[in-house]
Image (tube, rainbow, N blue to C red; front, side, top):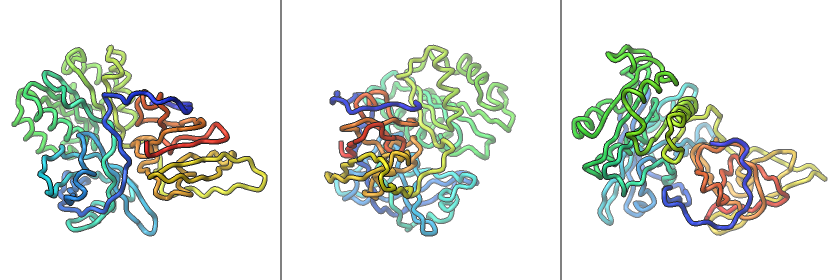
Length: 386
């Protein structure tokens, strides 16, 4: 992640081989096939994908989708990771995928979802996005470790199942922290997975408010406890790739400890389920006063270019400006986390306030998160279609 990253239009570079492919995110209306409780405050929601949309919802384990709903006259979007592994399907056959929704304190969407989502309900779902995934064709003899807190288990469920299923010599270790046993999402599914792969799957449940037999697994997963666990249970020298998913504080401390233990940055992937920021709902109203200096922002989306003038004094993000002329501009969290609003700077320059989603090689090629990008030149041209 980075703060105040400057990005200027650059020459094309080869596409990276490590990141998952990205395509233009689009919403389609899908039907809820099933809803089942996971814990007292979380549910698993399964969507049916009709044959004509099957290609749109092909995904890699670890990717996410955005859900869009109108609540009391206000459009609300929330991003949720896919907890089901990619499904094999025959041509012309309907398929499905699942996400897990945990109720957040004060969360309008997650609270509504606990009762508002039911079989037969239709809702707008964006096509899968995200690079929180592994090189799945190179799994033989590889050891993958996932560190998750609470609902951060969601993408790791899909990843663990895929890693273990695709190679008979791969290993997966999960370090999963919750307050108590009652808060553990997918508890039975994890136990079943352990029964199926007893020698290749290792589970370490850390409970902060419930005593466990092993003292190292009881208490808050802070820096001291992580060092103990990595020293006694999960030696970093034995791990090929790390996946971290949880709140910003946990991800940060885990990355710092791993770096201090000599783990290279390129072997650590992370995803946040919250940054504590209030998500964007609609474009913030902005109007230039007479004689006020403006920045010309040009946006290409679905092959159509649009132009909007943004007052310099408004310190408006590229996404906010784009939404005023292109309400269909893609976004989900608008907090620099999900990467849905990714676009490439073709001309001009911007400063990116936060970045929790783009890899360094993407930034080097001029890609930005438009929700976090603010113009630093008189004219900025961005392309969502690249």
